[in-house]
Structures are given as C-alpha cells and as structure tokens.
Image 1 (cartoon, rainbow, N blue to C red):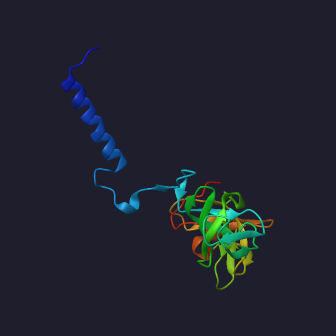
Image 2: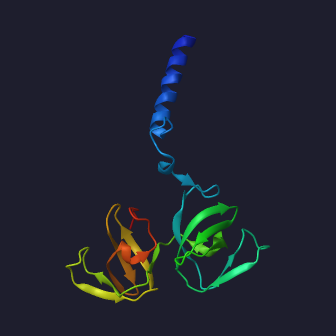
Image 3: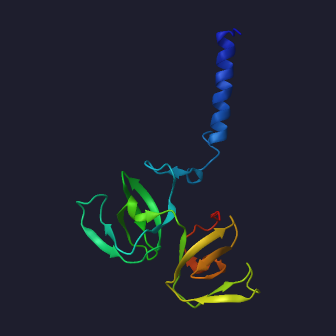
Length: 181
C-alpha cells in the first residue's frame, strides 16, 4: 500500500505525540516520578538487596584500589543500592553509612533490620489486634516474605517464626513499595 509523504508524516507525528504522552515526556510527570535504572543491571535505583556473607569489604570507592572503610559482618543485612559502576555497587547501610561493594557480595533476597527502640511485635495477622507470635529486639535481621503496595504491614520471617510486622518497625523497604512473595 502506498502512502503520500504527508500521510506518513501525520502518522509519524501522531505516534511521537502518543509516545511522549505515555512516557510522561509531555511535561505531566515531575522529575521525581521518573524511574531511574542502573547503568549496568537496568534495575530500578535505589533498590534494596542483602549482604551475601559475613565478611564483606565496604570501600570508599568503586574498585579494589580504594581503601576499605569497614568490614561488614552481618549476612543478609539489608542494604540500599544507590548507584552502579561496572561490577561495583554504592550502598547505604541501615545506620546511614555509605560505601562501595563488589556486586558479587550482595544478593536480591529481601531482608529487614529492626529499628532502634522498643520491642517490636510480630503478629499472626496484619492487624494490631491479632495474636502476637514474636517480639523482636532492635537490630534483629529477618526475611521479608512479601509486602503489598501502599500497605503498612509486611509478612516477615525470623528463624522459624512467620507473621506480620509494621513497616515503620524496620528498615528494608520503601514506604509504599510492593515486595512480591
């Protein structure tokens, strides 16, 4: 089927306008609404992950030539990945410390770190009125089983205990983030 040059231009223009509107490039989305992805993994940034082992070097820069600032001794500690550079990831720890680790030292497993403060109660259901199944001290590390988007409770696991913990009791998810189970 042959089309005139003018018809092709109109169709191409309509496609570009539709693509701009759908991508938010037409000015309707704010700078904060855009999803930033890593240059290496193409996964969203920031995002959470966990430490793979008990002895991980946290460096001041992305490479072995940079000095070690800390040696991390907490397997499955949640970390926030902020940036990527080749095989290195800039991370933030629950206490706010930042540094670089090799990508092979972190895993996608979602974990949580209980915030400082009073004992935190793990409940049998996602309500404060349900039976308590455990009480957690500050600095306990556990696994996030799942979290629904916009929901204040997450299903968690610590050892052989599983239940629900309020998001504001721990560090390891963003406020409205969905963590699939």
